[in-house]
Amino acid sequence: QPGLYIVATPIGNLGDMTLRALDVLKRCDGVACEDTRVTGKLLKHFDISKPLWRYDDHSGERDRQRLIDSMQTRAVALVSDAGTPLVSDPGYRLLRDAREAGVTVTTLPGACAAIAGLTLSGLPNDRFLFAGFLPQKDKARRDTLDGLSAIDATLVFYETGPRLVKSLDAIAQWDGARDVCVARELTKLHEEARRGTATELAEHYRAHPPKGEIVLLIGPPAEQEASEADVDALLAALLDEMS
Ligand code: SAM
Image (cartoon, rainbow, N blue to C red):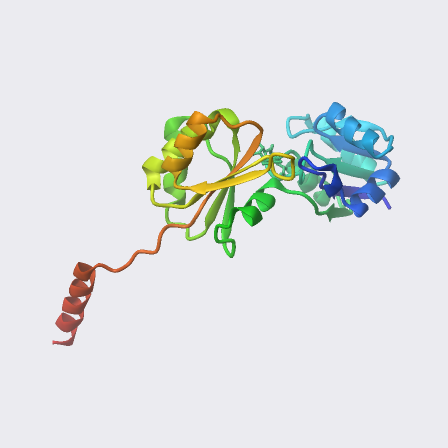
């Protein structure tokens, strides 16, 4: 069946490849991917040999158009280096333009680091907000955190080892009372989900510089207990209104 197939791939454990992903990768006409070497290795592991076309969101308009044209008559799979395409990964423009061109699009869900981190963290997961990578520059990072202050949900970020301690320091300064979780090397041998305040975690990772890939999660703001003064003020305002 011609069209665009969005195919999630494992984030570290090849056992997380889905049956449907294997089926589509075996039957498609070609695979659009971020890095042909990374995807070539993955396909080789599963004994699949297909034409690989490099594609990312910096690819030119013409490359994108050519891929979309071919989707009218051929089955094209889109994969990223790991996890779910489009989630902090290329594909948004391709998907948008393919839909506009009337291409049939379908998705094959599977591994996603943000969701894996959330489910392992033990932080509230009834409401969460995925916010990609925190900015690197101090002011931009603070502004981003400030912009998320009032959101009553667990915040989920992608993070890198070399930047983790700086981010934790910034979170400690921003709202040191929140529960934080560093979820590292998910689905891999050294998987870990370490909980604490940002200050505690910064101290730990300063002493043990983290290796590997990281999802950083921040619990929702602590519930504000009304202080006695607040209650007094509320009562006074009510009495005032009644008189
Ligand atoms: N699209 C991918 C997904 O669905 O998971 C994410 C791509 S994003 C460019 C890469 C980031 O995802 C890494 O920097 C890290 O923050 C996170 N990540 C990927 N694999 C991970 C893993 N096994 N454990 C923890 N975090 C991971």
